Image 1 (tube, one colour):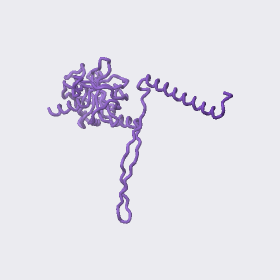
Image 2 (cartoon, rainbow, N blue to C red; image 1 turned 90 degrees about the horizontal axis):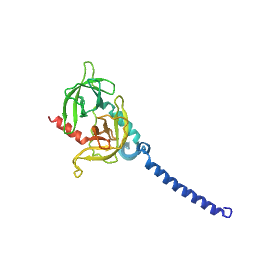
Image 3 (cartoon, one colour; image 1 turned 135 degrees about the vertical axis):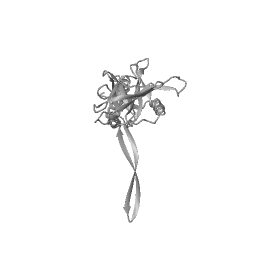
Image 4 (tube, one colour; image 1 turned 45 degrees about the vertical axis):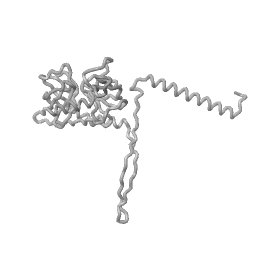
Length: 268
């Protein structure tokens, strides 16, 4: 070291820093690969460009000026908006013995509710629904779609009590692998879980039109049948069924099946 010139010392320092940076990057990448999804999940920023039109008056003539404005939207804000938007669109269903059945999703202003069919379901039983504001209502059984394994109820307002739920917005876009999704679950209060679409499930693997469900990489905090799944736009894209995969992963009913069941029910 004593025999090195100043220029050689500077070059040596740069070389050591460069090697150290590479080693740090490799170690960090390896650790992230082994970490659970909740640890590695980041809050992404989505950049949206909007076109703003400004009309100004000058010299008796209107002048139109078009500006491109860049708006930064955080994924965190989208998650919060989704939860706020849909908290009043779900109900918690219990039987006459006050046993928890699952979560139902409100489909219409009149109180049409859909929830997956469970083995414990009794079409002659009496069920109640609890809204986000803890108001309880009796549910009228309307029918079920055995093919898609869903049940339809209608909320019956009590005397002097008005129904205050909000219908959910059903998504129209096709789901994509890797897409961010949010679920609302919990038997008493809303519990939020966030993840991504991980795989599609088909009755016939060779036929992509036979999809009966899908999986996510969500680490669930509770096991609640009927938990709705939303995209970052706050639209319903799926609903947790009462079935699981051989690896005990929850199976979600895709919104395409739900829409088919709703269409068939309304056509009766």
